[in-house]
Length: 252
Ligand code: PGA
Image (tube, rainbow, N blue to C red):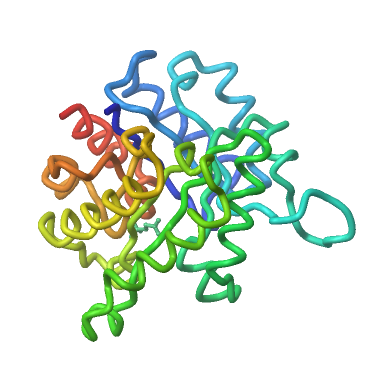
């Protein structure tokens, strides 16, 4: 299947830096890139990226994603952004359940599942993040943790589950420079794929991305694994040359 390379800018960027980054990206992109591409940007910059996309031709291939969404559809929820609002601004994807949101904002499996549901209801593809901490891995609980996290989303979304993207992001690999080895990542991806297969006969539509210190040097070997359908890239997505190298590696 066509791979997806999604950048997760996290809380980085500025009007000037975003323009520079997207112009640099556009120089290395053709209108028909080798894979699907997205940038998941801070919500306040979505409109800026939308405008850049409409003025710089090679950027038409770059889809826009948000990094979070409210589980609520609207109303008295100060500070929240709804899925409908993101859709109106041209978002194709939204990350839900990133470990930083689970860790720093207390997001539970049930809330993440509701957020995925809100996104799907508005026509946005949720990129559902799952992953174990170092302590959980060392205790031998990796499979149990990722299966529990994904099961909540499967349970809440029924047959719509075929419209999600999953991202396996071992927490110990995020922003640490420590990457899961291709074999370690593949083993977890195979478990997630089997779980999706049991949930829907449309499972082959569902991309399972790897995230956690994926970079220009290690992307090709990770992306060559049979069950790794792309990457969710943090740090390396902020450098145009690195992000372009990862995109090129997704041609495999
Ligand atoms: P990283 O972040 O590539 O900087 O490790 C990945 C992520 O958190 O999505």
